[in-house]
Length: 283
Image (cartoon, rainbow, N blue to C red; front, side, top):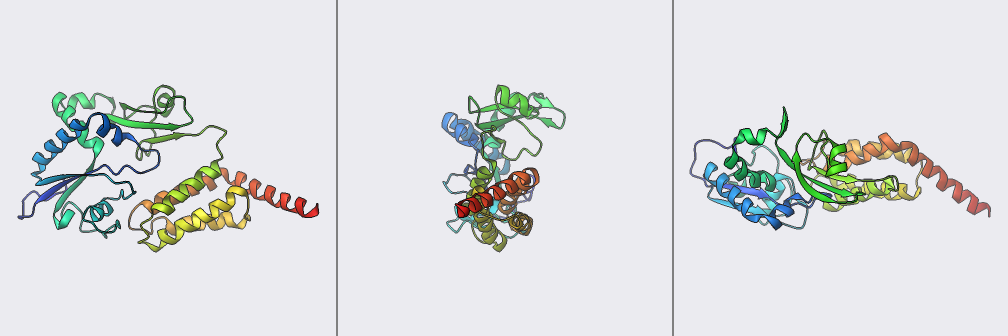
């Protein structure tokens, strides 16, 4: 909202609330809309008055078009592909008009902040990390849940008591994996998600996510060779930073983390597969 021009040029202004919560592990917005929808509507009214909006749109859709301009394209009835920036949505957004795009949680909490005051909200947490946040806890925990806690809560406390907070918070989605998890299979599933959800506009993302998933599927069963690990790393570098939106980066980072932290596991799986093939051939 702060980036929108202060003086109107005659075009209407729009508020768009991103409720397209399709990313893996993220399930906070649906809890707000399911259990307290009037808080979201009240927040839309407050934000709309503040920015003199002509209309507010709450975007809900099953497919993953979470990048801002991709969402606007889809809302206009076009293919969900990101726009080149600038111009930015604050000046040229929905239907070519000034648009503020925000998320469900931010809008829904604004009535409470206005009711109690900003000092009250800032009293939660600690300096430079204050306020509250909805955390989603999924995976290998006894009680998967969505809870609202201070932004500064530690991951250890969150998992033990409720959920978790870490540096580089992202969507505040925490998926807990215990030692029984096949980490290669888990990353392969992530790779499939990003391949499936790519809008296919950018060549590095369109081709790269397919290669990531294909190689990860082979690595999952060890049907690969050691050189492909380095090739996989190179593919992630060709994707990262070379796409219009951040989906390409999000697809590359889990694979990079897998290679960085679990390379011996990948190499061992490949060697074991080769040994099995040699043994079967000998028999």
